[in-house]
Length: 151
Image (cartoon, rainbow, N blue to C red; front, side, top):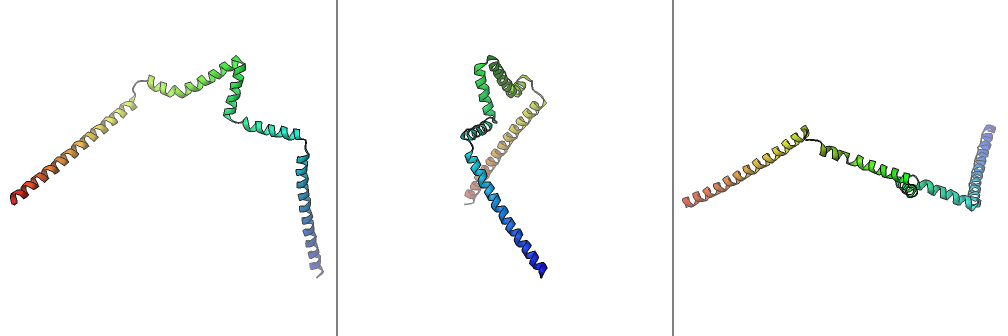
């Protein structure tokens, strides 16, 4: 009996302590919020500006804009900017240039052969359909003549 009472007392004390801890945590959160509000407006503004700069400076577009602004002031940077642009254009058009400058290869001959084979196959398919239509038409004509003759 005494052990049960003692266990119940300890449980009650744990519950009370847990409630006190929660109250203190709530109080700490409120104090932190109050501390943030009471901080100087300059530091808040500085922090917001820094966050904005960090967000904007991560993108490729922001970097290009910064490079363009630097190019306006310094001719060396302008030349480097032009060189980078020319490099990207060269990389983009190089496959087309290689294809235009190279002669016909085995792939081109195979492709040409396959295309001509498809054209021939289509031609013969059309011829076959036309013959079938003609033969069906003649069959109908003969059938009409036979019916006329029988009558």
